[in-house]
Image (cartoon, rainbow, N blue to C red; front, side):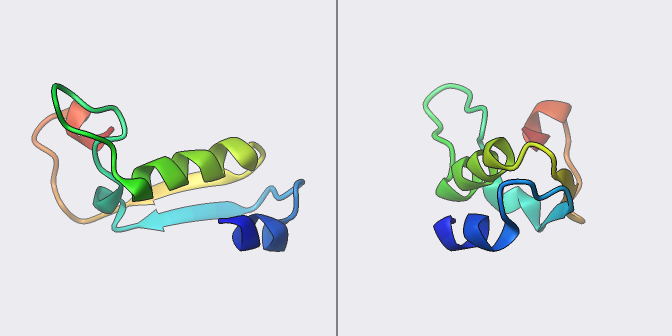
Length: 69
């Protein structure tokens, strides 16, 4: 993450595309589930690059909107 942030620079305003974003599941956990490291890292990346445009892409269907969190 540190190297990626250095490469982008603090004023990065380009796209960040999370392909296969289902790997970042449980960012907002329900019950005893825990967020994945991938999800936490993706959130940190977004928070540290607030001018970026973020796209979440995956082909797996979600049965409920909360499953996309």
